[in-house]
Length: 216
Image (cartoon, rainbow, N blue to C red; front, side, top):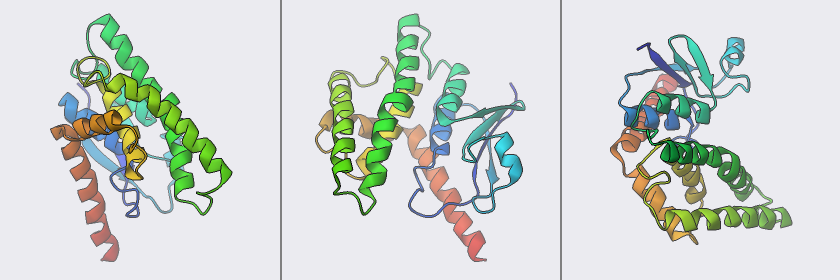
């Protein structure tokens, strides 16, 4: 097996810590039990060669034996393909896991992100907010009906749950799950897993250590 190297920023401001998307890849790697090492790229003065790894000048990216993967969904799916802990062998369950993984990035996140950004802006009481909030509530209503009847989206815990729970964490950060108790309970189940706790603690510790280096 080749070396897995996950790259994230060398530092970020306090607000996004715990939500930078290398967390998803760290979580998947911990769940899969795969060895990996971290690498870092500057948050400030981003190098030109960063675009060769991530064409939108973002993190994370993963290299596996020199082959590059970018976008958190693609990275998590690749990690999952290397471990039966994150993608079930049964064809029906596997199809469910892959479909729900893409639903996280295609259906849930596009509803969460505009609502989240507008919630932090001076325009949070605007008419646009009611549109975004309504769209998010519609998506959460549909997901609520699913997670109210099962612990995980594809039977056993899978890559789909990493992507979905992490997307929902952002909504939960600003109280967006208050009317959807099953979604909230689902996030709580996912984030209670030891692999999430380690991934989250490792990311927070890295950025905290980076504060000390910048201060020095």
